[in-house]
Length: 216
Image 1 (cartoon, helix red, strand yellow):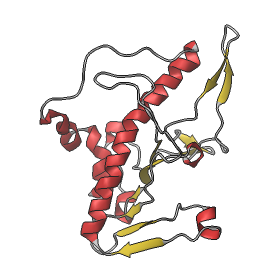
Image 2 (spheres, helix red, strand yellow; image 1 turned 135 degrees about the vertical axis):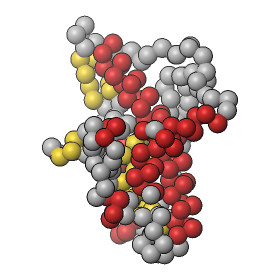
Image 3 (cartoon, helix red, strand yellow; image 1 turned 180 degrees about the vertical axis):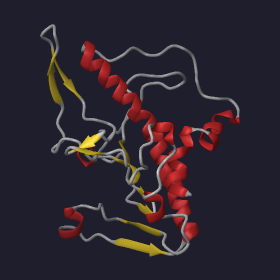
Image 4 (cartoon, one colour; image 1 turned 90 degrees about the horizontal axis):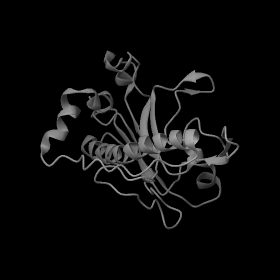
């Protein structure tokens, strides 16, 4: 998980996204119940369609707009998921063959500040059992800005990988909720760029807002 520093938390984002204030954090979780706002314990929702068919709806893949009645637009959290339906050059994926999906245990705070940057890592799962049942280690590193920047780049890399898949999952869930079936494979051709043009939006468009907010 990546947390902005104090100055970044209070800075509004550009008006391109309805003038919302920036996120309090960005990151990816493996367990469905670890996603803020998700049902606990995580269970598939049973939905009865108009035709009487009962279907199971998977757990949410993206932090909801509200949590306990409070706006959650300051959080950019996604659940690690795989593509159920191929899109463009990408084909359906296998999420896991065991238990672990993401095995990083990382928190990065204010990575661009030489004085205030913090990296928290180790074997600790940041949960009750790790603190009270297991012999885990937790390392807190302060003031090593190059290290914090490297960890931040890794966290953003993992986040971007799964954010795309989480959005595709939400779209698939919406189709499933409406029709009772997953959407069909998209056969509209590839959409992966063959040159560096794909980077433009991250430097001069809305795609770069979240990165700028956290890292500037």
